Image (cartoon, rainbow, N blue to C red; front, side, top):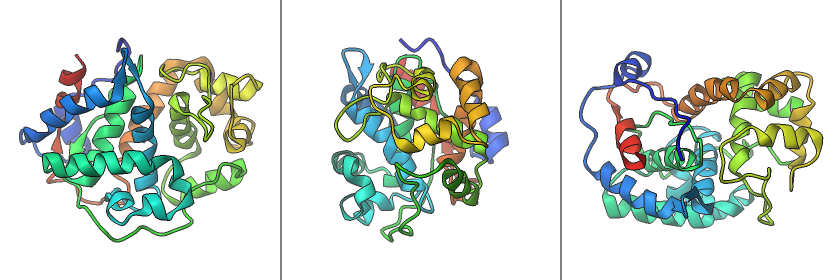
Length: 267
């Protein structure tokens, strides 16, 4: 089920992020066991898994990966989070149940959701973020009808290149629209069909913003590359997602790597 994985050694993670080599707290093993039941149905990633993937972006992009989307109730207060109310409630309850940080759980759950999809890559998972009940800034999220130029600009303001943007948007391979229609034909598979189907107009549903990115001046080349080369997409997506999971965090020296907990749970 998980034949395609990007496995990163702890030594490499420590070098990249300055992470401590401390053992991952045992509570995360319990979390992983729980998520395996919650996020996988009949061997495939389910709607809770795909909601968790989206939640990670919605928590981080407005400012910092700090759990405020749940702790300050951004989930119900902001229209952009309409599809996330249930997963916010679910993960908020699980954070309390297992006595783990909300911000950490959001990113852990997203990485688990990605890996739960057929051929989903393993994203490195670190814990140690500081939770906040102060809401992040409003009007930061790109809209579903935005132009390619405006989305590129929004991501650039957060420190992401156009290539990283296009790679991250590829997570829509597992996404559905508000009506429950997939953004490609294979929402339980982590594949490049999203890129090709969006570009050629054959996807069950497409966001206007995705269509715009598929033919944007600064984005179409990467879009086409990732659509035709799954390895190129994976090589760009994994580090971009890891970077997103630490957005707004300047010091990770006290963070602990828990990637092995995720891989062990899905082995």
